[in-house]
Length: 93
Image 1 (cartoon, rainbow, N blue to C red):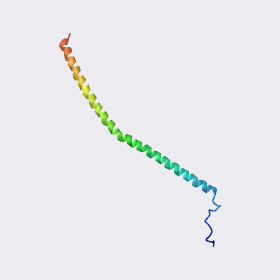
Image 2 (image 1 turned 90 degrees about the vertical axis):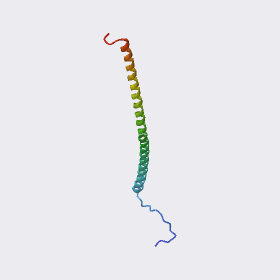
Image 3 (image 1 turned 30 degrees about the vertical axis):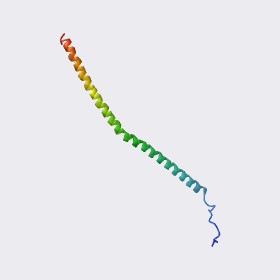
Image 4 (image 1 turned 180 degrees about the vertical axis):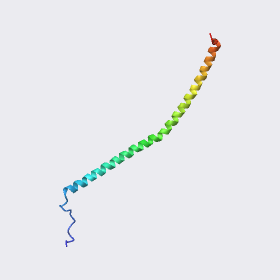
């Protein structure tokens, strides 16, 4: 048996391939985590953009309503101009 005064040590029999494999796995894990973090950030920005989109649709709806109102006003005004022209110049002349 070994004496209790001996310290635990790492065996010099560990192959270099094992150390390289563990190092590459660690680098791969860090790279994967960074990629996931980047994807989450992109998704958060996309969610914010999509949540803002209904507001843009509401704004477009309001613009369409204003344009329809202006269109109606223009039609009424053109009708009034047409009536005035008909009174000045009778149709058929």
